[in-house]
Image 1 (cartoon, one colour):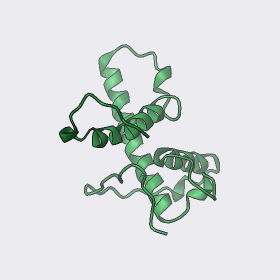
Image 2 (cartoon, rainbow, N blue to C red; image 1 turned 60 degrees about the vertical axis):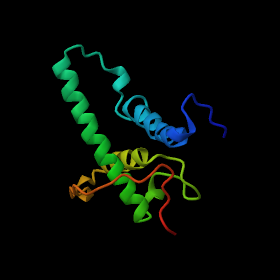
Image 3 (cartoon, one colour; image 1 turned 135 degrees about the horizontal axis):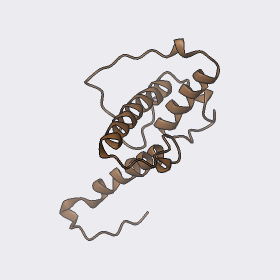
Image 4 (spheres, rainbow, N blue to C red; image 1 turned 90 degrees about the vertical axis):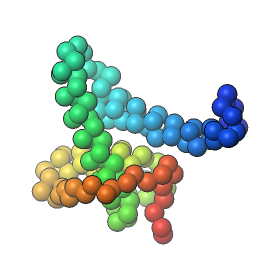
Length: 127
């Protein structure tokens, strides 16, 4: 890939561009590939604020769940077994939806930790 930028080399445009992959995926997850934000017809700012808070919490939970499933090597329940095609969000989202459809939500347990850090783009667990 060739990156062309109007930033100076000292500003390290490649590091800034790395964030684009996370941002593009986040927009897709908030819109057509997840929370369907693109279908919302709200106009009241207070309602939109509450909706964005719910989407933020959902995103946090699904990223954590997707990461957890990869770390414990259980992502193949919702993704291809031979390679990973889905984002962390999509792995968590589809696994949660699977539990919902199978009426097995009692398996969904959450532990909140404030020291959680998102993995860098391209995260691959150790084999």
